[in-house]
Each structure stands twice: as structure tokens, then as C-alpha cells.
Length: 180
View 1: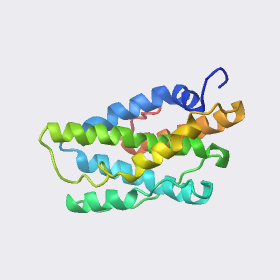
View 2 (view 1 turned 120 degrees about the horizontal axis):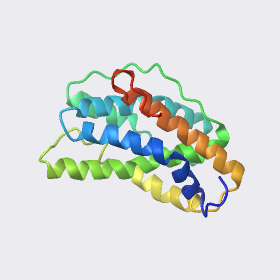
View 3 (view 1 turned 180 degrees about the horizontal axis):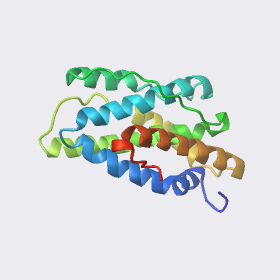
View 4 (view 1 turned 90 degrees about the vertical axis):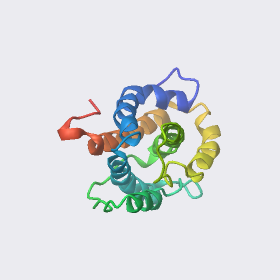
């Protein structure tokens, strides 16, 4: 994890493959009839991550909670809120990796919302169009753009990998492991 200009560069390089695989699996779900599945995956993965963040985030740095928005969207589609059994674990020192992965996903959500509108798809957009997470991303970005020490980069990368692995676990059709 050395040789990167910023912590953000380090996190991006460490998670590039798993991030790309997850985006490839999740993006199409939101653009078609699988929007309920997309939202279920989001809910199932985010719920335990949000619980971890409530305990591990430094005071004042907790990302906005997104699962109520997802639950609202699921309800508007007539889909039952999933029962969350998964747990999330990451080193507390890796908080910035978790925050980067969760907050950075709001950029993809915005792109998905635009693509849905262009395709004439509407509804269930409370999560995709929420302003709180992009605002948090803007607040987090200066910290991510700082040069991190190698220990911070390793902890952040491990934590971000845990985020992507949990999403991949829930997104995997028929047990296909997207994290591989």
C-alpha cells in the first residue's frame, strides 16, 4: 500500500477488481425489472455495515443511515423488508475504508438514477436520489485526499474489502462468488 499519493488512491487500487465485479452485477439490476433485488441487496448489506459504523465511526463522522430510505422504496414496490442475519466486521482503524466504500457508492447511485430516468423508469428512488450521502462524500473527500500512512492504508483497504465482500455475498446469484 505504499507509493500512492493519497489514501483514496490506495483504497481504489486495492479494491479495483472487487468494486468492478460488484458494479457489473448490481448496475443492471437497478435498470430493469430487478430493482427490488437491487434494493434488497442494498438493504441486506448496508444494515450490518450501518450498525458497525454506529459503533466504530469517530464522533461526527458517521455516514448518513440509508436503510430507512431503502425500506421505503421496497415498501413502495410492495416488497417485504428482508430479515437481516449477516454481521459485518472490520478493524476499527479501517473506518475510512468503510466510509469510502459506502459514501463513494452514492456516486454510482446518482448515475443509476439518471440512467433509469433516461430509460423511462420511475419510482422507488428515495435511496438512489438521496442528497445526504453525496454531501457526506464531499465532507469525507478532503480526508481521503490526504496522504495516509501505510498502516492506515492497509486497515482501510481491509475494511473496504470487507464491505465489497458483504455486498458480493448478497448479490451473488446461485452462490456465485463475485468477490473472487
